[in-house]
Length: 297
Image (cartoon, rainbow, N blue to C red):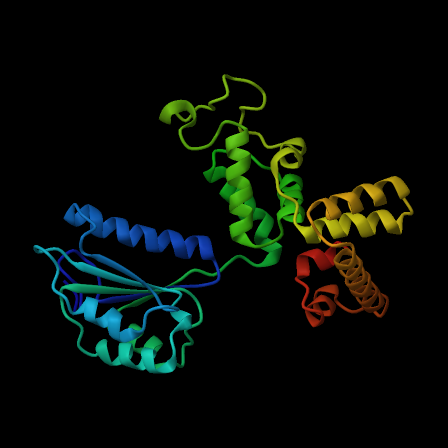
């Protein structure tokens, strides 16, 4: 057994962090499940939120011996919300943590030059999960689709990103909806791995454009893109259709006007940058836009 390692293989502290929020959440769930599986109960698990609980309350729980011979897991979510004083208290605690507790700090916002980060590195382990680059995101979407027992090709992955945006949590939500729509969700096939839609075309795992259009929520930004595209080609019917969709989402007319005006301003800015031979991603970054929608220009 290595120094600081507990009898069940857990270290005294973990920082579970990174921009890949689904993986961060999965790692935290797995850690909780491991403690439950080892002890047969969740009675020795305490979960806190750094936005509501300071380090003193957290460390009081960490100093409390567990029931039986199990390990106590103390998990703090949204760790980046702790004040410096709380971080310093936790860093000092990690100088000599009790051997019956595993402290898990979850979330982004803890910098490498901070005392708490350095204390985690010295006493335990940093588990960092970074989100894929925007250029790699379609491949990530297809991989997540496979985990849902779906088969998705690049055009469908890009269309899903256009509708849902590039935020991973939103994409995962839409994949859940597609899986349920096609009979591939939880419980489909009663654990046999077979689609649950009676062999119908919709129940198969192949994702088609019409599946995405049928069930996926369209973000306001995507609807604005559709509206301005229709305006650009002078398609009156499509323009009013997309405008009605935006107004149907309870957007006030004046809000829609300013959204479209802002969008057209961005469009003009990036178009001018392209004409000057500049990289559209850099031009978009200057406006706070993400590179993926900028490339649609």
